Image (cartoon, rainbow, N blue to C red):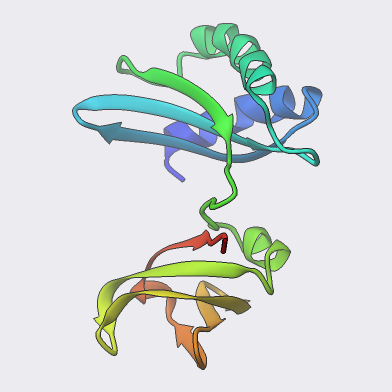
Length: 150
């Protein structure tokens, strides 16, 4: 998490909690030449548009006053989604036994993407059952997301 994301996390956490949500993630990225500041929420009953709007409206004056982002940006508040990224150790612990998609920087046995049940997480290393147990080292992993099977 970079400095801007950490600052916004600290500002957004009490706002999200007051609105009855869990702050899932904060992301500051550039896409198509435009900067985006995104706050992702989760909740026991999910997150709806009204909840996102409440948190967004509450965050606007806080962000204006704190001014943590030096450039212009688009601010978005949304649900973490059912295929959310897993980043922190607590994310992996919470979703042990769930289906995940592991994307790798380089192919292993001809594949850069592996889908399977999350079996273990150990200091960044991830073990999945993808037609057999596979362990991927932290430095091999580009991302891990929950994977919904229909």
